[in-house]
Each structure stands twice: as C-alpha cells, then as structure tokens.
Image 1 (cartoon, each protein chain N blue to C red):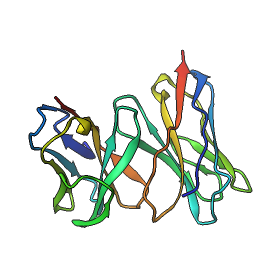
Image 2 (tube, helix red, strand yellow):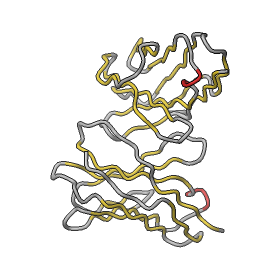
Image 3 (spheres, rainbow over the protein chains, first blue to last red):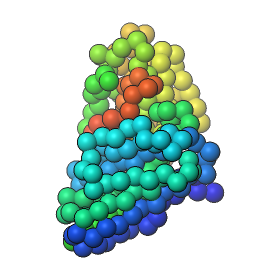
Image 4 (cartoon, each protein chain N blue to C red):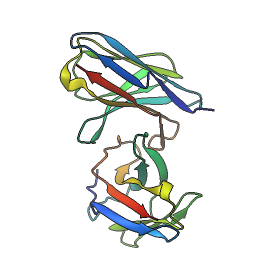
Length: 111
Length: 109
C-alpha cells in the first residue's frame, strides 16, 4: 500500500543524456512536489503542482521539466544531464498544504 | 518564514523521552510550527504541527511556549528506529517548506 512511489530508485547515467523520474501517489491528494537533496543533505523544493497546474517553480534550470498527466502523477524529465544534477530527488504529495507525504527518493548519479 | 534554530545533534537513551528543542523567536502570529524527520536513506516524514496549543498524536507531542518563541518536540519512549534528522520549520500555511539543517538525533541502545 505504498502512498507515494517513485521509479527508478537508482539512476546512473552519462553526462548529456536525457532521463525521467516517475512519481505516483494513491492518497487522492491534489498537490504534488519535487524536491532535490544534494550531497550536503540540503533539501530544496523544485516544483509544485496543484490539480495538474504548476504553482511553484523555483530557480531551477529549464533543463528540468515536470509533467503532470493527472493529479496522481508528477514526472520529472531532465535534459542534457550535468554532473551537478547528481542528487537524491524526492517526490511528495499533500492535501493540506504543508502536511506532505514523501516518496522514497531516486538517487541520480551523473558520470 | 521565521528562522528556526536547533541544536546540531543530540543523544538519547533508548526507552527514554527524547526532547528536541527549537527556537523561533521571530515567529509571526499566523505561522505554524511544523516538525518533520528524515531517517537515513528515506524521504522526510511529517510528524506534527501546531499554532499555539500543545499538540499530541501517535508519534509525538509538541509543546509550544506561551510566547511562541520556542517549542519542544517530545518522543515519549524513543526507540532505535527514531534515529533521524529532525527538522523544525516555522511557516505560514500558504508558504513553501524550507528545510534547514535540523537536529541529528542518535538513540543509544
């Protein structure tokens, strides 16, 4: 009964490649988020969608493009991957704004 | 958002109550105090939040001082599985969450 799931759990790829991370929530929440946790363990919000509409877009390179096909899914596509994109990416969802439920994370390593 | 200050790390013996302090002296009247934790290699987990009154749920209790300038998260009977980084965040309900460095809590057997 996974509430917020992400695939893949690990992703190793070469610089310059394009990759996607998928997120699904079965909680019926209206809002979904993407966070990035870097090597220093700082956790920062990247995007937020409410009912498939983008509501938060932090200062993130436009190589990162979130896509929400429906309110249960928020995928993250990354073009032209760079070494600095290596991090753990967390998806989250909420119904009440700041009570968020996080997924297990996707560890992205760019070589 | 109000800035919060937490100790970098704390130890607590297994089975004892873990009391994690947080200072938020610049908190405004409509800002809530939220607590999250992150167990190693997992996503953050919501614990509890409150505005003025003390709150309790199945995970923890939150004690907020009368002047709201500080609060304490209490894990009543800490277990080894409570070893994690605990984040205290003060924010308006419409604001985005900004995670700080948190307190690294070690539960000792």
